[in-house]
Length: 81
Image 1 (cartoon, rainbow, N blue to C red):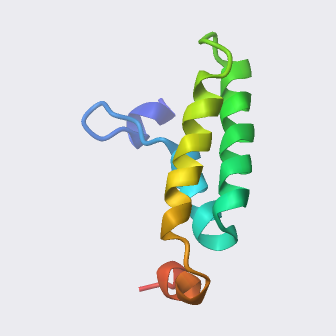
Image 2 (cartoon, helix red, strand yellow):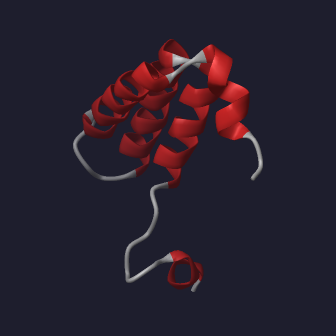
């Protein structure tokens, strides 16, 4: 029931990825990589997929998102409009 309310056109958003973007903007590249790996490993353990696939992909995403980290612009990017 709740997945129907969250989906847009039958597609569910990736809340782990959204949280990972917030962590990278707030804390930086290294924290993003470690958080991405930990969250991905948790997803791998909870799902029945290949162990390590989500962990690797989320760690790579955290690494790549880290290039957009700028300590001076953190408040600007996270402010309320």
